[in-house]
Length: 140
Image (cartoon, rainbow, N blue to C red; front, top):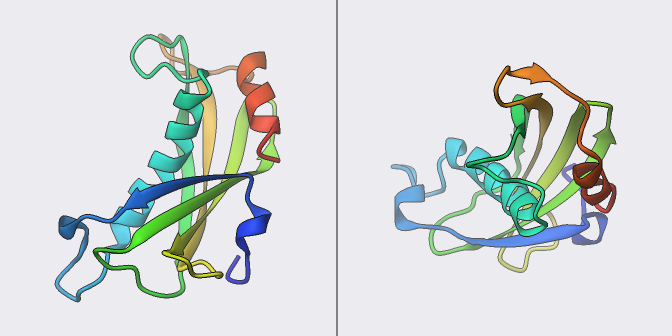
């Protein structure tokens, strides 16, 4: 996804970097990128009304993730997190996320994570609820 462009993503969330995101080397620490991924996807789901983090009976657990780093991001940059659905299964979804620094045309980093939908009370996998699936389809 090194050559991904903004046009290849269906939804964006602007995330301001914070002073504390920088590490001793003067750029955003690698673990923070995963936080950006999580924030972009979950904010999208919450805004669309299909994720209730406190009372929802069915929730998505992250079971796989990865990130490739291409160029540094540092405070006070503004990150534009583009998300799309790469694969929509019966009980899982694979998101691809690209992090664009300020107005850059190519991503500073790109990665993925997989949500498996589970019943909160039992932690057993269940099919993606129809209302969630309808929202996820808009990201394909």
